[in-house]
Image (tube, rainbow, N blue to C red; front, side, top):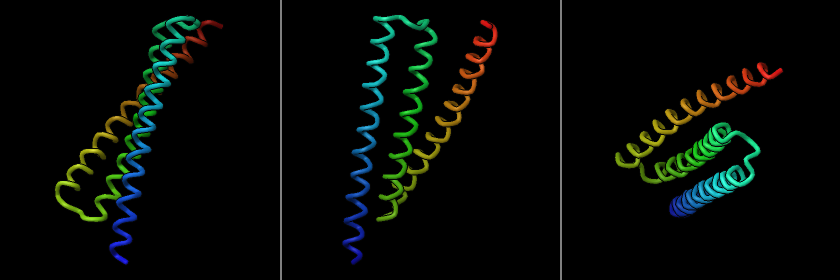
Length: 121
């Protein structure tokens, strides 16, 4: 039974890793398509569009990092080594820092947009 649970956890962790890669790929494709739309249509000011695209990509990457963390947690439950625990700690630290600064930038962008919208009235 233990071997079955170990195998199942390994397969699940691999599936989550694959899904992480898919999320990153889709995020990059979305960002590229949005860049092309902005470049060829220029419906928005370039600086505003670039910031919006960058923040959206950052949110997708933060989500992908959450999935990567989940896969590493699954792997560390199978055979927790110091190497696996160190990797997990590094990912948790990176995720925390990324999410903190991303949330700060999103808040600043919303305040800036709110200020600009208020000024244009």
